[in-house]
Amino acid sequence: MIYQRSSALFVEAKKYIPGGVNSPVRAFKSVGGDPVFVERAKGAYLYDADGNKLIDFISSWGPLILGHAYEPVINAVIDKARLGTSFGMPTEIETELAQLAVSMVPNIDKIRFVNSGTEACMSAIRLARGFTGKEKIIKFAGCYHGHSDAFLIQAGSGAVTFGSPNSPGVTKGTAKDTLLAQYNNLESVSTLIAANKGEIAAVIIEPVAGNMGCIVPSDTFMDGLRKICTEENILLVFDEVMTGFRVGRGGAQEALGIDADIVTFGKVIGGGLPVGAFASRDEIMAHLAPEGPVYQAGTLSGNPLAMSAGLAMLTELNNRPEIFESLNKKTTYLNNGLASVLTEQGIPHQINRFGSMISVHFTENPVVDFSSSAKGNNEFFRRYFHGMLEEGIYLPPSAFESYFLNDAISYKDLDHTIEGLKKVAPRLV
Ligand code: KE4
Image (cartoon, rainbow, N blue to C red; front, side, top):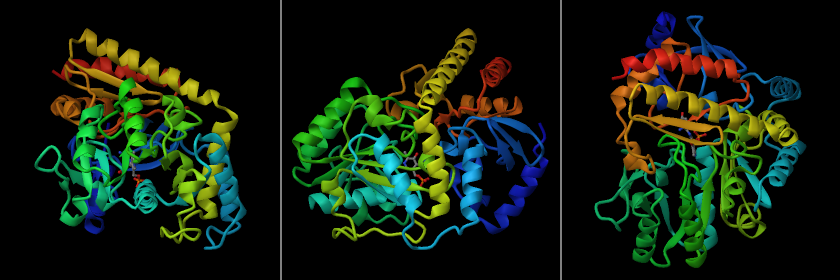
């Protein structure tokens, strides 16, 4: 496949935009080569600047669960845009989307809309701190909750000391309030709690992780985490920016049977436009301005244009919950097809899957946390990514990302993907 125009566009972009992209993962840093510039998309397919047609497995990193340019969403946005895009005043459609989201998701009474998953998670932590009066939080190595300072933290020096910044610009003062635990490791959580008794406001977690590749919590881990948080009067925050309205109508709370205290959303809730949200029971949300003292605000929060996309998307998912089962079946089919090819070729691999989230890891050992995910052979992944791209299959350009299937993908597309791997696999070793 030719990528000349994409490469030329990348040169131009780098003149005016740092790294030529507006979000780092798009720059192909971990797989090498120049990023593909897309011109348009429809259903399961991307059409790039060189006219290549690619089967899309990122769906804009999750939002486009029904496929690109889904008619009901597009029509809703066009109709709404004609009436004005944003007013900085309350509009009825915000209540419509709030009411629908609250009706679909367990354990939430109220929801506040923001403009990204980052804003949603940042605000959720401030609300947890304001509600509990405590300052520290626990996050998990490898989980990503957006780029606000409190989350850009890596392991500190000792097992029970606080974190240290993993980006310049994040202060030590901020990092000292973020403690780092290991996914699927309850002991790492209880050790931190014991060493910071009475100081922890919240534990925030991706209930199904998607930023280490896809990692599924063990049955005992999430139950145990809920129990510890309840016993220690710590709020359990489910970051459902990826899983919300993707792994089922009620998201991961419903799929795992675990009640969170605060839930954050992004991606699907905006139908492809910039929407994030955080939600909880009345008792906690009553602390949020203007009702309560915890401040949070946003010029474009709840703007009717983005609300129209989210409302059209969630209405479709709410009216046709069979979409989730259809997506799960397609993802299982892909899982089985890829696994049989890699096994036949004798290539060590793990495939993790939950609902329509899936990831391939080139390693012998089960991938259950960040350190086991980091053991994957990145050279294999690089060859895999570019080989599949040559076959017209667009995968996430990083081994630490999850695929997001959309329901426009057909079994013919999945067979083409599996056949593509049959051609690529012999070149991996
Ligand atoms: P945004 O601010 O990018 O809307 O959401 C941040 C966020 C929060 N929580 C979870 C679980 C997330 O996965 C994300 C963002 N996901 C990445 C994909 N790994 C977005 C892609 C990107 O950064 O460009």
